[in-house]
Length: 403
Image 1 (spheres, rainbow, N blue to C red):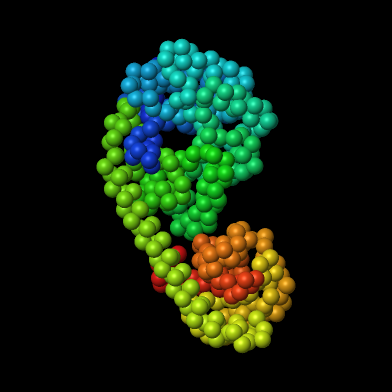
Image 2 (spheres, rainbow, N blue to C red):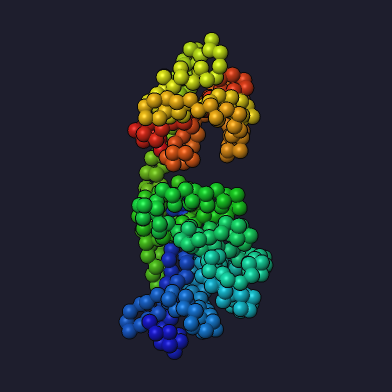
């Protein structure tokens, strides 16, 4: 596409709309406005035009506002009060400290468009200016009811501290990398961390680039409230029936719910099995003098289940050696005695919970630092002040579908 063709034929620009669906209502709640150009009968994306820094800023802004004006005019004719997601280059936005965009939006506010329907999308890692100035501008926009979305999280490097500073209302998380099998697991761990960040910030998660059912399932399972992608609906020149996927999404989510409940039930049942087993095993340990004497007795009963055992007190100080399975042999590692593990996430919380409930806990799935494998840990109170931790092997979890 020749940029000059666009600049001399702005009347050939037009908005396309990509529907955004909700997890709670299973319907369209908004649209992302995408810029297109009619070029000799073909509809082409204007993305390359807007990302071409060789084109003067004022020309890119002119084309952007021409498309945005058409989109907002169209939205005024709709009965549904959809959210309107608009992309803005933060570097261009700061040319006049966002005044021209605000003037355009206020013009439509005077025509009856509520500004709390506007979601301003920016890509944080593309911004090269002063972050504090951008932060002030976005907070200023938010005083008008305009929502802020950080786009393309996960697609390229994003600094979580910068994202936190901008206080977005929406985090748009890209799922494209999930299609790369060599990256999928590590990337899922990163996205899980982002879901925790969103929860702490009070931001809504919108998962984009969904092109398959398993990606939609992942987005649903990891706190996604909004979903977008070709699997759901491709960009189009017209808006769609808000309920176009209501039955399909309801069916998909019921399938995901059934699968998740099955997994949770398996985890619960496994916890109960460990609880019963440990109650039996501990009767054999009552007369043993040291904690290191207890570990081989417990390991013998659970040799096909766990690969590491150790005992800590209520403050997280290790009172036993590590007892580790290496090449089918169990080895004591006394150098771990007196190490403290209270810094681990949920450690003290779980200690208090076990002390109060008088029963064991099966942890969530996590990557073991030493083996790099996905594991779970079963912790169990052996008396009022001491707790045993059993690290469960990946193979055992895989065989019982509790990964």
